[in-house]
Length: 103
Image (cartoon, rainbow, N blue to C red; front, side, top):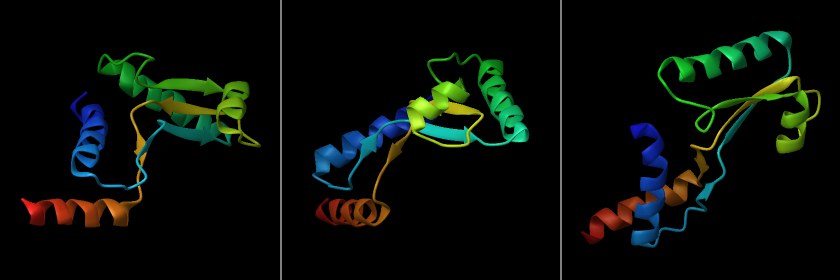
């Protein structure tokens, strides 16, 4: 759960420091395109369950859900977690360096 909180912490710091790194929190999708990928996706979800994390943290997507959520073709399923974001890494790095220098 601490790792999940780091995504929001990065967002908080970028907002506080005025760093425009194109932060976009939208979760993480992983598509399964073969039967082996589907098996691994189920295993990944089970790893979350084994440590007490429910579907609000990680869930398996069947083929229809994966196609609808990801607009992915040739998919047999996948996984989704809301705990992820995209950033432009160079902008984040330069912004953090500038924030450190200001302090």
